[in-house]
Each structure stands twice: as structure tokens, then as C-alpha cells.
Length: 301
Image (tube, rainbow, N blue to C red; front, side, top):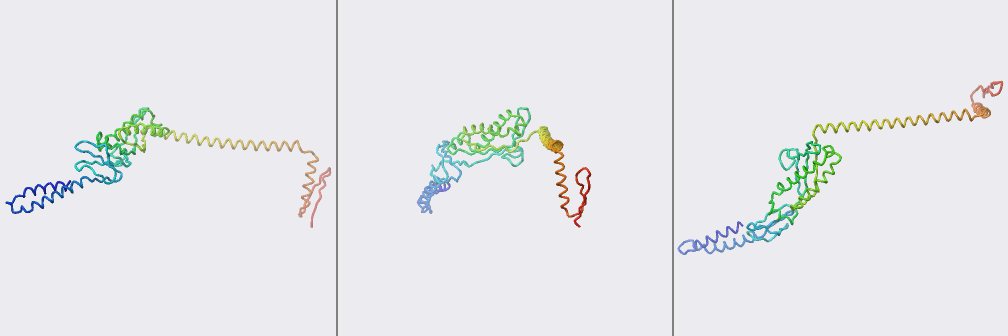
């Protein structure tokens, strides 16, 4: 538009000095030509709009918003129309209790009341993107600051609405995934009605009251002690079973010896032992079986 406005001024100046009585009236024609050229150049440059990658353009003319969106690249539009660009890439909105971590300065975490009346602090990140076809509707009904008007209030409200169905401990541990799925479904519906697409909802942290934390820690320690004692008892049972089996084996062995061996078998085993001693190169005293038990000395020297 700069060249267009400059051309208008040049054309007006050309007509203003187009008077023979003026000494510089000879510049009137060149100024008119230059003005016309600048106006044409201004109209051409104003008609060509460049939209960057990952953006769409919304055309508005004197308050009327066109349903047509401009995709990335060069496009021809009315030179007096206004083109507003919207980012259609994935965006994130973080609400955190840590300073300088979220979109808002300071503590911006979501504080909710659970079913048992305890206050829980939730850090959350919302991943979403604008649907390109809905950009004119968003521009007309909401404006360019839809992040503060739609994303933030809907997310915080839906989390508070759904947290009342869960106890604080369950929300922190066993039912955390269920809670995240539930709020995702409700927020996704609201976003879709507004022309946004919810891609992912990330619960980054759930902070419980100090009293609840101590209770959970005590419960975990008690469960660990119980598991340790269960292991010790199991080990003792196994050791007792081993000793019982060992004692039973010894008893069975002794029973077999006392009832199953005859005098002849014992005499046979005695003879075998004496033969093994006799085969040794060392001198020995061997007591032979019988009534006299006469010892026999064997010496290989």
C-alpha cells in the first residue's frame, strides 16, 4: 500500500502544478506518469499476499469475513482487503506450578477438589492445533486470541468437573490413566465444536497434600515390610520341608537296615571288607569271623 499512497500524492501534485503560469509546470506531466505507475505498482503488490508454511490466511473486507482461506504460498486478493494469518501447526499450552514453565508467569497449576474433599494440584500440557477450514469461523466468532478464550478456560473447567469423581490417592496412583482418558474425551468434544483439534492431553504431575503423602509413604513401607516377611516365611517353610524330607530319608534308611539285613548278609559284607584290607600293601591285623575270632596278621614285607 505504500506505493499506492505515494502514487496518489504524486498524481495530485502533478495536477496541482499543471498551470502554465508556474515556472515548474513542466514537471506536471512526469509527476502524473510517475503517480500512475506507483498506483499500479501499489495495487499489484497489495494484491499479492504470501502465506508462510504452517499458516493459513483469513480474508476480511470492510468487516466481512470470507469463507475462503489462503493456503501457504502466493495468492491474489483484493488489494484493500485485510489478511490475518493463523498458525495451523501443533501448539502446546502448559499450566504448571513452576515459575516460567507455563504460558502464564508464576504458579498457574490447576487446583481441584477430589471426591474426598482434598485439594490436589495438577500440572497439565495441552497439545492441539487449529483446523484450517475453521479459521474464518474462529476469526469471526472468537478472534486471534482463542488460546486464552477457549483453550485455557475449557481445559481448567473440565478438569475440575471430572476430578470430583475420584479420591485423591486413586487420582495419584491407580486411576490416573482413567482420569486422563476421561478429561481428554470431554475436552476433545468442546474443542471440536470450536474448530480446534485436541491431539494429546498430558498430565505432567499430580501434587497431593502433605498429610496424604505421608499416609501413602506409610502404606508403601508397610506393604514392603509385609512382602519381605512373606518372603522370609516362604524361605523358612522351604527349609522346614527340606529337613523333614531329610529326616524321613534317614528314618527309612535305618528301618531298612534294621529289618532287611540277615546274619549271612552281614557275614558276607565282613568277608568283603577283610579282602579289601588284605589287598592293601600295608601290614594289618585282620580278625576273622567265627567263634574264636582269631586275628590274622598279614605283612607284605
